[in-house]
Amino acid sequence: MTNIRRAVAADADAIAEITKEAFRLYKDDLHSSYPIAALNETVGDVLCDIERHAVYVAQSDGKIVGSIRVKTLNPSLAYIYRFGVSPHINNTGIGSDLLNAVIADCRSANVKAIALHTNARYYKLARYYYGKRFFVHSTSTDKGYIRALFVKELTDEECDVSPAFDL
Image 1 (spheres, rainbow, N blue to C red):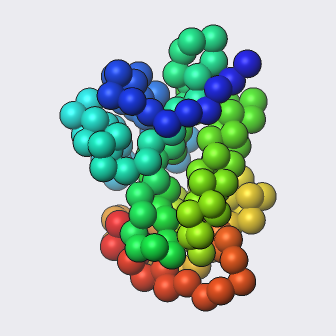
Image 2: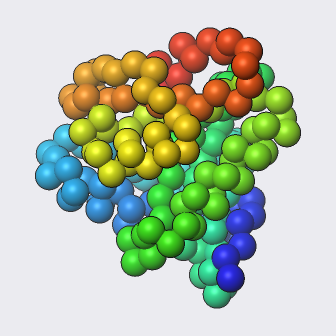
């Protein structure tokens, strides 16, 4: 059985490893040569995120198998980053469980929208986010690839997503 919970400092090593595994797969799937910041992240970076932002982990049989991070950009907008699941258990619903936990917490905090970036050419991820009712708000090439800003609206109220543009 999988348990979704907020991360604690003791989880930092496992989160760093899962993040590197997931983003190596991402890079390999895209046959990309552009730098991916998640691959250079340290355990200290993870600890900092646990202290400053919301970090969730998926735990199965006592082992961390996925994580997702979310920061509040303003009271109306949250931003997801460093979302990854162990490549050994992809497509088992654990990523959806993590994402659903973030969405539920954002709804209860009266957040109007959630944003995230991903490579627009990564069809598998784009299709996944569309299936979760995210839409492409805009694209940019400022990081050396076509980067899509996906947004999920949680209310019918308008939300300024511009704070997510430069992340």
